[in-house]
Amino acid sequence: MPKVKNKCVLVGYNSVDDAGVYKLSKDLALVQTVDFFPPVVDDPYDFGSIAAANALSDIYAMGGKPISALNIVGYPKKLLPLSYLEEILKGGVDKCKEAGVPIIGGHTLKTQEPIYGLAANGIIHPKKIVTNAGAKPGDFLILTKPLGIGIITTAIKQNKAPRRMVKEAVKIMSELNKISSEVMLEFEVKACTDITGYGFLGHLCEMTKASGVGAKVYLSKIPVLDYAWKLVEQNIVPGGTIYNRDFIEGKVDWGKDICEEAKLVLCDAQTSGGLLISISKNKAEKLLVSLLRRGIVNSAIVGEVIRDKKCRIKVAW
Ligand code: CO
Ligand code: CO
Ligand code: CO
Image (cartoon, helix red, strand yellow):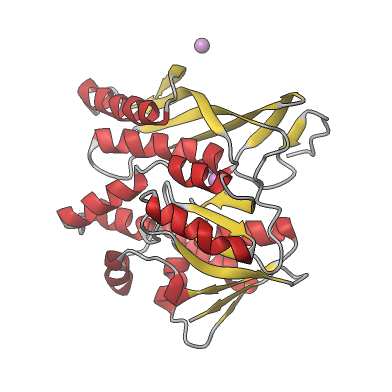
């Protein structure tokens, strides 16, 4: 993409961030994002609600407030009953309702497999944008959802996921990042992004590069779904995760005791993952306690930002 030069574009393609931000006036900016994908779970209602939570997440990650959304739908009408589509859309509508976001339009086309997602709009004060570029050495890093979702959804696709595992994964994926974002805004955080397709290390890498810093993370402190460990040992790993793992190799210094399974988990491609927040050390504990109190129970301090011009990530036990 060519570079954008426009005074109103506050966040655009030039920085790899969660959403675009366009200044409307001196105290109001528009946050825009779009996200859609084929089903990650069998239940159409759950799929719709996960896709909607995932699409809104990029607005929450910028510190914005989502205000409206448009449906993006692809559907193979000849292969699947329309009742299935109805359920997908109902899942999306209900999730948006929970977020206080009306769906005000959309577009549908015929596709080989179902696709669903949203183009979402939010608002933000131009001076209060939380980009991924503000992390400072000495900050602590907080993650708000556990990793391993990509590995579990792959097990679901291979019919190797017991019902309890599916239930837990659906609960995590369809949880909005709304409360996490609201709590984050009560503190002066330095940077934030949400963990999605590039995995924890991929998105952390975007943050360190954008911020011109390095990071050190501790495997033992990172929340991971128990099921994911068992699956990765059986080699149930999505293609995207393996791709992320290869991509990150030259950018990470692995501790001696970090096994290959752990490397894959840290690179696991997430759907509707949590927020990764960088906040100064002396405020981190307070933010963590607030997150836990508001029900974001998997939140944890997972590492710290360090000085490093090469923007490398150290992974220690
Ligand atoms: Co994002
Ligand atoms: Co996105
Ligand atoms: Co039209």
